[in-house]
Image (cartoon, rainbow, N blue to C red; front, side, top):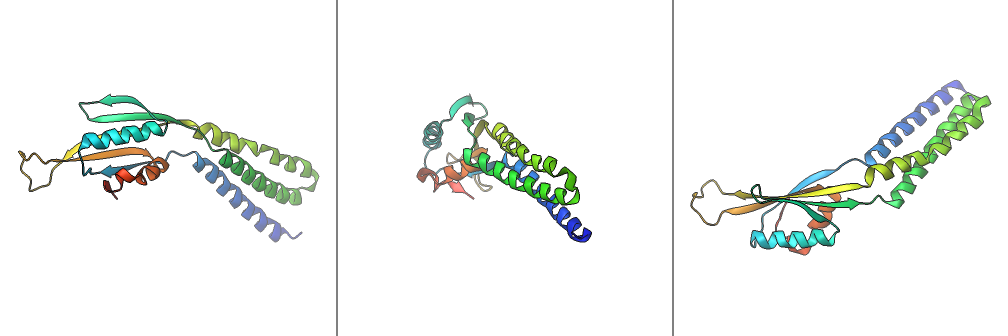
Length: 184
C-alpha cells in the first residue's frame, strides 16, 4: 500500500482510539446536578412525599440535620450489563481496526497486533468498577422571601434544593406530585 494512504488511515484510527478512550472514561463520570422546587403545599408534605419516593427507589436516609434543614439519602447504583457489553464490543472493534492498520505497517508482527483485541474486557471492567457505587441525594430546605416582603410576613416561601445524579433527577421530575413544584 501507499505510504500516504497508510499514514492517513493510521492517523484516523488513532483519532478513533482517542475518542473511544474518552467515551469509556466518560461512561463512569459523576454527573451531579441540582433542581429547585417551590412547593405549592406545605413543606412537610413535600418532604414526606420525597422521602417515600426515594425509599421506594431503594435509597435510605443516612443523615438528617434539622439545624441546617438538610437530609441525605444513600443508595447503591448498580452498573448496567448492557453498557458493559457495549463498551467491551466498541473497544474490540476499535482495537481490531488499530491492529489491522499496524499489521499493514509491520506485517511480521500481525499476530501480536491482533492480540490487542483480547484487551477489550478491560474497558468493561473499568466501567463496572467505576459505575457501581453508592450515590447520594441531598435535600436542602431554604426559606426565601421576595424583596418587597416584610420580615414579619408569615407566608415566607420555602425552596427545596435537590442535588443528585442527573438520571435520578430526570426520573424524579416525571413524578406526578412534583410537576407543579419544579422550577426549570
